Image (cartoon, rainbow, N blue to C red):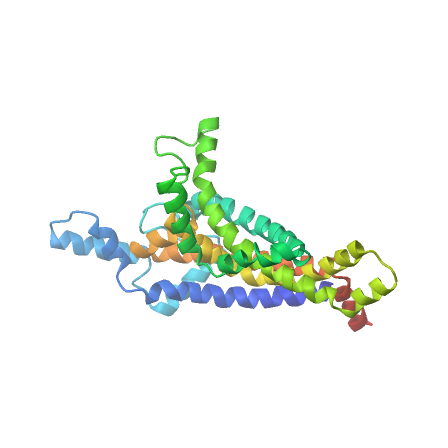
Length: 331
């Protein structure tokens, strides 16, 4: 187990280095000058003063240095836990801006990922033994899993927000409210949260349900299922073993799909103007904020890598065959 974890940590460390390097390069490929964008919001009638301010902020952000030195300075600051200062919200540190948006993104992602995985697998397993569900309800899953997150979010906002008027379609809480411990604020928070959550949940739910349905049918046709039935085992017991074996590929699929779900969450936040990391990415791009953009991407990369690592560890713990293989290779 230690050698397995050591190999995984080494692979994830290399992945982290490559991802962070690409993350640092992406903003530099963007057209435009962040300092010019920042100073464009100020009214400076004196050309000399504008040039002096531009030179000052360019030097302050380290953008006047060679690219290789900017890259080394970035790693040095990163190892110290310093992500720089936001150009868009100067002089607020990038870390402070990101920490203000992270709770909203996690409030969407964690329930959507966990509930869609559990509910989708359970529903898919039930549909595999129900011809009515398999022929009527489950085909809706094919439509959901093929639906882009952003398009479904727009459809839900139009139908449930504008036409029905049941849920708000923008922000994280009412514009007339302030964050506080009260029922009015909590109810407004949940009402604004529901539509972004529902769009993420439905798309992921359809994919997990279809995957589990197909895996259950495959497992029920396997030799061990026929052997158990020949021994007189109850059909319920056979299905229980089939479900346990079918869950393992779904765990692997969860690790693979995490990046897609996170990307869908970012787009969904933009659709609903939800103040999470997706909204920060949009604002950082519009304001050419290199530091906020690379800091947001860095947090997303780290979060996806940690989640994948946890899934890898959980897979080993729930699948006894992997532990047997480790013991055999050690012997």
